Image (cartoon, rainbow over all chains, first blue to last red; front, top):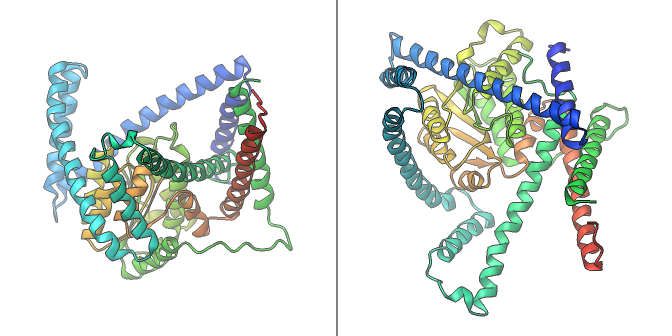
Length: 205
Length: 254
């Protein structure tokens, strides 16, 4: 077996955390809290390492001779300016936060607006690309629920039999969503067990 | 008995049943009938796309999503890492090694680990490049924005988007569509699944996300996992029906 020590540590810690959830003994509960606290710190450190890696990738793209990426250069300038400003002024400084948000919020809003257009276009392509009853049902239900949530039926949802019909229509997606989520929960459970048994070892590199 | 205690007992019971079944079904026994799984068209086309990508000397891109390993989407991220492991192993002989992007720091480090171990297992460690496992961004939209240039500029001909995404996955599928690249996508988030169904070439819905490594021949534990999920599904159905009957009879366990 590769990485036996890492595997043993992962299994033991996984079992201790799981036991902390199932068996309400104070020592196991506090051990679980402690281990999860360590995990959160490790994840934070991993994020810093990931960001350094991201900067390195863009550095390599910005300095290469052939096919230099100027967007990477802009990224690096913005990245180092943000780091320096954050280090000098402090991350809680209102001016610093205002400056960052003044760039981030419009950029992300633009992406959301772009997403709306992309999805409208994708829905037009849907029936062209996907044949069958499921695609028709998908589009039909999307139109129905757009209509229901448009406000055009305001007031009608209090009158019988519209009230019952709208109630039934609103319950249909909840049933489907619960079915999908149950499947994902069972898949998650089994994926976790594979880690606990050492069958999956994503840390063995 | 309180509601929380009943939840804990039922949860622990499911975990024990799943663990025993997983162990028993993963052990290779002589005479055991080999299970044939249903055909999932998206995964069949993914296998074909992997072969074509390797033949054409193009690149595969695996996007692992932004699910934190300490959060509710941790298991989905682990399934995505298993998928990356198999894809790296299957496409190792390609001129262009696969590239993995993620939206979370620990996931990007683990993606580098998965790529490294796949290359080491294939005796090709000298081809490993740690920049092939990279962080796209740490917020959902910055992740999408950081991944779109990878899809556009890195000679990618097949994209595997498996993990925790939100509706921003639509931007990635659109970037792939513009490059006329193959896309198979799956997420644990319901809004993302709706987006994927309408925008991705090959959508995987619900628990099909967890089936990808098994269908890519990840090993006996992954195959057993699918069987265990089937068993658990029947257990959950029995529990739901039992609950309905008890409720109709007026019996309360609380």
